[in-house]
Structures are given as C-alpha cells and as structure tokens.
Image 1 (cartoon, rainbow, N blue to C red):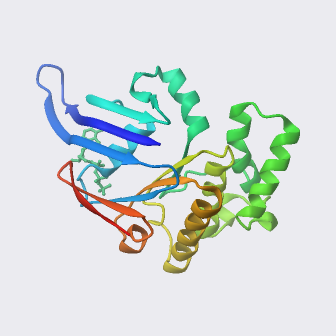
Image 2: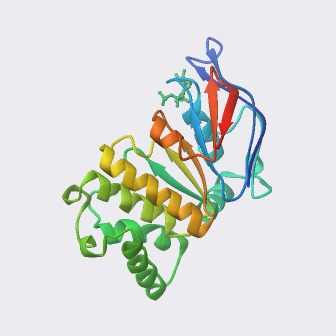
Length: 229
Ligand SMILES: Nc1ncnc2c1ncn2[C@@H]1O[C@H](COP(=O)(O)OP(=O)(O)OP(=O)(O)O)[C@@H](O)[C@H]1O
C-alpha cells in the first residue's frame, strides 16, 4: 500500500551559495500493507514529521521514491499529486485544522465539494458521516462551540468522507485529554477493523504507539528497528 524506497532527505537553509545543508532522513526503507496500523515513534527532531510530509507529497524527497498503491508519487506533477491525494489519503493533525467560520457539517462536507460531488450525494454522505462519529446533534455547531474531542471527531469525519484507503496522522491525540484520547484510539481501531483502513501514525505517546500492529523507531533520521504485536 505504501512503499518508501531508499529515501534520503535534506533541507537547505540560508542564502544560495552560502546555504547550510541539514540532512534529515537517511536511507529510509519502509513498507506498510493494506489494513495495517503502523505507528512511528522517535525523539523530537528525529525526522518523523518530515517523513509524513514526504509521504503526503507536501515536500519532495532529495533522493528515493515513494509508492502509494503502486503509483510512484515522487514522479507526479503538483496538480496530479493534489488529485491523487484527495482520492487516496486522509489526514488527521494534532491541531484539527478545522475552518472556524464553518459549522461541523460544512467542515465535513468540504472535501466532497472539492471533489465535485453532487449536492444530493454530499448531503447524504455528510449526514451519514456525522452519525458515524456521533455528532448528528452538533451539525450546526461551529468549532469554537465544540470540545477538543468533538473537534477531533469532526476532523476525522472530514478525513474519512472521501473514503481514503490510507490515513496519515501526526500526533492525533496531542491536543486531547486522556478520556478523549482513549475514545479516539478506539475509534481508529474500529475504522481499521470495520473498513480495513490503513493508518500511519506519528506519536510521542506510548498509549498511541501501542495500537500499532507494528511500531517503527526513528533515531537521527534512520529507522532503528521496531516492534510487532
Ligand atoms: N522546512 C525545514 N527547513 C529546514 N529544516 C527543517 C525543516 N523542517 C524540519 N527541519 C529540520 O528537520 C529535522 C527533523 O524535523 P521533524 O519535524 O521531521 O522532526 P520530528 O521528529 O517530527 O520532531 P517533533 O517530534 O518535535 O515534531 C529537525 O532538525 C528540523 O529542524
């Protein structure tokens, strides 16, 4: 489902000719199969978010290739990448990234509008999704009127509405208290079991790391090893 092959990445900072090169990821090889939950752990600055940003196509690798569903995404143009992303990947961020001026309903519906779905299809799918995440009664609420856990569920519903086969999550429970964290983890496991959705999750948190069928450790930009259930 996801294959990362001999990936190296470095950032360049400073002015041209005087730039400093910061090597971040070194010879990363990684395979995630359909229906797996893989968690990635590592110290701050080890390169976890960079890896997720490369897999998401938000940054391009200095060297190496990334395949998603057998498509070499490193070769796609910006426009093709954006199209590919909306059909294959969903994202969950620590900071939810909801649009404050839109209700829960409107936030969840947005990817369907971007995808060009009809109004009838949008309404049905958005209402179904609100029910699935247990927020039917909150559809007209704005993000500021929802709890952290409810906002996170809106952001998950928005990620799921286009039924992506893969969800990439960067510290998904970082803004949640322990009760909401457990609720979200149960929900991720349910989605994985019921819908065979593949998850790649970056975390600092042991409780989150534990839900992985496999955990990968990144140290100083290299994969150090891992643990399987
Ligand atoms: N756009 C950038 N330009 C220059 N350096 C960057 C950039 N993004 C990240 N880095 C550097 O790359 C290294 C890895 O950063 P990254 O955010 O991937 O780490 P991380 O493991 O996700 O850390 P954290 O757990 O704190 O989020 C850091 O040294 C960081 O300073």
